[in-house]
Length: 140
Image (cartoon, rainbow, N blue to C red):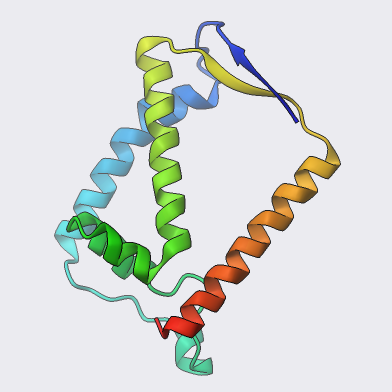
């Protein structure tokens, strides 16, 4: 996999223009409204009710509420993979916003091979499995 920095001006079809200019404000509004309109509402997990085991995303809503309340460690304890993914997503949105507003160079993948894709796919699956085993062991 090869990476390069692209200093070309931002185009309207670049993913950073959509993420930076549209998704950042929309995400902030949706999270605020969801938390304001449904405080303390817990989502039921059908998988957990039927199998008495947590599903892969069990604890995600409680982790999001903990994050909104500033309890970062509690959020990681409840759902480490989802919280890490949220932080990566927020990091990407900030990166996209800096490109859209300030013209920071864009990072591009020049070439990705099947082997690279397979390794990324395997890593994602392994992380998901390890996260689920953590949830089962911790009784989340």
